[in-house]
Length: 209
Image (cartoon, rainbow, N blue to C red; front, side):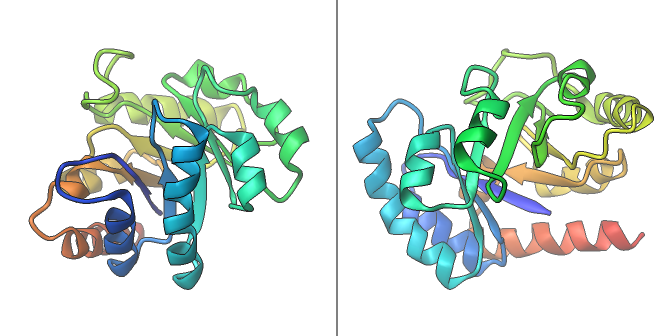
């Protein structure tokens, strides 16, 4: 399971980023653009919604619950300072995809019994967008969190996030997480389409081991 998280860059527009990862086979996009107005966000979303529909890919917005409902996308990803997931579920309905951010096992244990669909757990390593906000997990941290969560009988899919590269995937997936979210390493790759394909191939091969 690969999620691509958009990130403004000097090389590509957001729509170009999304087009490339879709061409590479990614089926799950998170539109994340901080510090812009709803109208600016809406204009970017209007560019990528047709691309996601054409490629039968899921599209979630980072926060912006009302805008996600207005534009009919699949759901939202909620950070710790965003709308409460329970309120988002009540607002968006049963069919919406709702993901939440977590940094520790306790963050996920608090979600037991909540109607959320996945957890983005990180950071694996520091990135330009998440620098020094939370302790790094690394492979050992992921393994410890996954074990605690599963022992508590919480089956929520866990997606690793935070500076992940192609080379990290076998070690990360061996910890028991269900997928990875990638942003910068795709955008900065010499060939983002090819890199996306390699990420998916590596994820698929680790599942079979």
